[in-house]
Image: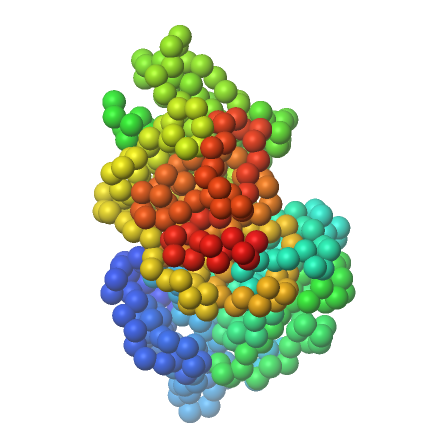
Amino acid sequence: MSYYELCNTVAQAVEKTVLPLIGKTEAKTGMGMGADGTETERIDKIAEDAALSVLESDGRSMRLVSEELGEKIIGSKPEFTVILDPVDGTFNAVNNIPFFCVPVAIGDSDLSDTRYGYVKNLVNGDVYTAEYGHGAFLNNNMIHVSSRSYFPEMSFLSYSHHPYAVPANNHRVRRVRIFGSAALELCYIASGIFDAFIDMREMLRVTDIAAGKLIVEEAGGMVTDREGAQLETPLDVKQRLNLVASNGLSHNKLLELV
Amino acid sequence: MSYYELCNTVAQAVEKTVLPLIGKTEAKTGMGMGADGTETERIDKIAEDAALSVLESDGRSMRLVSEELGEKIIGSKPEFTVILDPVDGTFNAVNNIPFFCVPVAIGDSDLSDTRYGYVKNLVNGDVYTAEYGHGAFLNNNMIHVSSRSYFPEMSFLSYSHHPYAVPANNHRVRRVRIFGSAALELCYIASGIFDAFIDMREMLRVTDIAAGKLIVEEAGGMVTDREGAQLETPLDVKQRLNLVASNGLSHNKLLELV
């Protein structure tokens, strides 16, 4: 099974179990704390179980790093690490807001050695993929980041805990959106619909961003922390990150902003 | 034909013409300026034409206030005004981001005398309705605003032209989202998923908010301008509004924030 087939089989299994639960009360029965230290919704657990059973039947030995279970070694000598968020956008999914996805990445020991990234939009079926060194794709068509670098023409995805952006920084942009699924939003940077992604909440996990980061980079964009440093974060769901992603052209200007 | 049937027939006609165009290049061929002073995308014009043909064949005389055409009198003695945004969330629709809707309201002369509000989510088919004095409904089930009033537990929808919310106001909330379709986002206030909606860009039009405003109010919430005043804006697409909508409990605190 190729990496694509493995990721796609995982996504299909998640999709099949998750879609009947969207917006249903039973999706949000609390299940206690996940390994990442946040409350697990029932939909997350069900999705993770479905993914795990696909990976266990693959036959290869691998390490799984996933939001709820933390880490699990399948077999005796892992060949690679699967980094998974069973449902990215859980709040949306349980509230019937049509914006959530499954991100799956294949890597090794930290965020900088991801070899393969896969994100499936569970609402409209779009699939974003990237293999290290081979470009990024949306439904098998090559995608590229935008070429905008003038703030008043740029579209931002920008997370904060503060409800009202005061014009203290004097930067005005074309539009700001926050959809609540970082993995999918990073793919919008890769496909050039949006120009910049900022998340300063220090809440992102490696499972949220491993796939999207490679997809942005393979589409010609740039992903760093708020200091402009490469992310070499270990694949541990307890790690919390801030993130700046862009088409590259405006990256330094973005770092000044945050 | 009841108001519900009229609105629903309009929405079905829009849906049929719009869905095949989602994410397609032909959806975003510019069509010049609409009556509201913004660039018309082809998808908006096609949707409006479909809606107009439903209204013209209704038989009753009415006034149509719509984003692209501005105003049109159908027949000789209008019985009511239809306030329509053929596609709310056009940027999303043309970019294949699954978040856009059709809002239709029935009113008279200004935003304060709306009798009926209807919003259809074109992605998942959810229909929100409200008749003045008779409550608000999602797919025929009565809905009510949330009861949260403590900022750190509240979920906000909050628009700004500024990309990064600096913590100058010292208020920290549970989550902030910006989906890019105000009509549908107001319905999330009505159904209690979100607790507050703020838009200070002075860009909202009566066609964006007439339906959602009544739906929020009939669900027990409150909708005002940034000074806390009732919106008695004439039904003219050239008008630009700012808006604060909430479950009512936190409204004064929100007004202080903006």
